[in-house]
Image 1: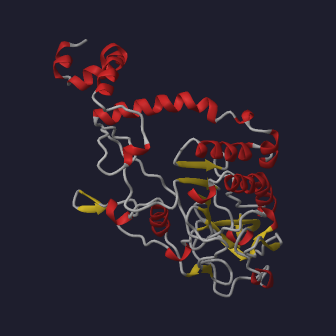
Image 2 (image 1 turned 60 degrees about the vertical axis):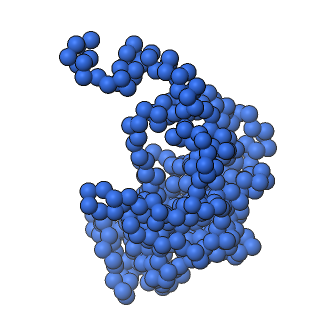
Image 3 (image 1 turned 90 degrees about the horizontal axis):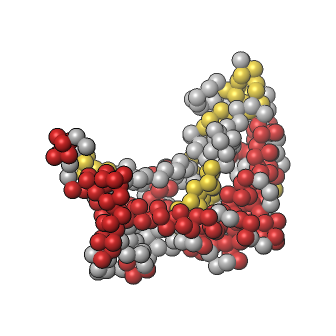
Length: 368
């Protein structure tokens, strides 16, 4: 060890580095005796709790409607006009330019492209959705603009670091069991069906049962829902990959009494244009990215069932009725988890910051 370097090391650094971190092993017992590493308990998050564990649950601003969140991320951007937002007027203008003109998006677009899918009303709510994405169990839907982010904050505090190590250890010890879907009865496996999406969604339910608070599921590598061409074939295949398993997840959560305490959010980072995308100047039978208006749905913990919030214009290009900004969506999710997003504001280099970027309003119209 370099003497000059060693003389500048703090006691914390020495414990972390000495013997490849072996000094930390002895420190664990000392911190446990001091009450810094005790297992996280329900009482730890109660007001006035004596627990010093920095990772212990903190009391929320008000009672939460949801304890868990499952984000089913259809990465790539599913088309709203081919899933949950039927626009029959597109058929009238097929092969023609839209009378309002095309909005500016990433790539060049041309004439109106009607949906190749047939829409049908489902469930008690009678909400229309396409046959490419027929989720029979989704009676609890809300259409919101959405782009999900899960901010993380680093904490260099020694106690927080040690508690993080303990948490990682406990997760490692329980992960083998949680991810072992072979333990499930054959009837449950059959309900979810085959494939990667089915396995992911089944694991999500197993994690919820074990108290995991936030789960994010990506549909696949790169951007599978990014259908710049052949949207009929691509979206049909993608919908079939996850349709059965999503319906099974909602049913499974209901049967286990977990649905009302779990908020399920499903959608992509943007929608797609109602006008066809041009590839080398010719229609590619796909759609460009569209940030002007799109759909996501919410179900479970604290949201209304069978409710549609907001609307796009008659062609599905832009949100025109009760538009919801991403900050509004984040504020609403935090509200359902028991947090007042305005109380999470902190000041840094001369300006205020928070998870909703000092904006956002709770969309109370969708709350149960």
